[in-house]
Image 1 (cartoon, rainbow, N blue to C red):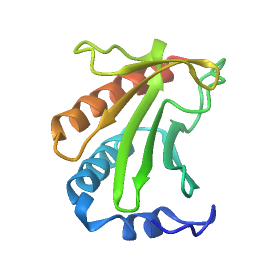
Image 2 (cartoon, rainbow, N blue to C red):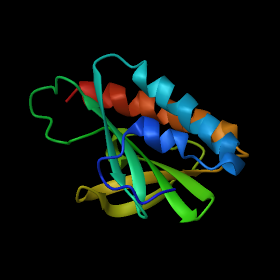
Image 3 (cartoon, rainbow, N blue to C red):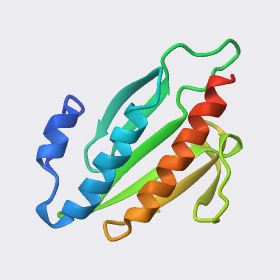
Image 4 (tube, one colour):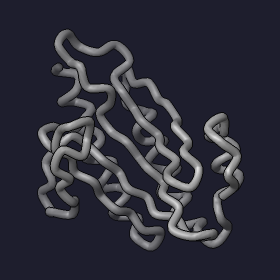
Length: 144
C-alpha cells in the first residue's frame, strides 16, 4: 500500500490492494456491500496510511438521543508490504457474540467497550458472521 496520504479515495485504496490478498478483498467487499444494503446508513472512508484504512457506517438520520458516531467500523490494517488484516468492530452493548468469536476491547470504541472480529482471507464464514453482527448493530442503533 502506498503512503499517498489522507486524501486517498476508497477506489484508490481498493486498486492498490495486494494481489496475494484477493480472498480477503472479496470478503471485505462482500461485507461492505451487505452493510450498504441496510436502510438509512451513511458511509465514510478514513485512510491513515501505514496505520489503517477504515470504513465506518452510521445511521444517516440518527434517532433522538443517539450520540455515537457509528454502528460498525471495518479497519483494514497493513501488517507488512503485501499483507493485510481486516478487523470489524462494534459497540459491545449493540451486538451479541453467540459463537464467542470476537475480542472484547475495553474502552476501545470512542471510550466505550467494543468487540472486534479479526477476519482472515481463508475464512469467508467469519465475514458472514460479522455481517450478521452488523445487521444486529444497525437494528439496535435505529432504536436510539
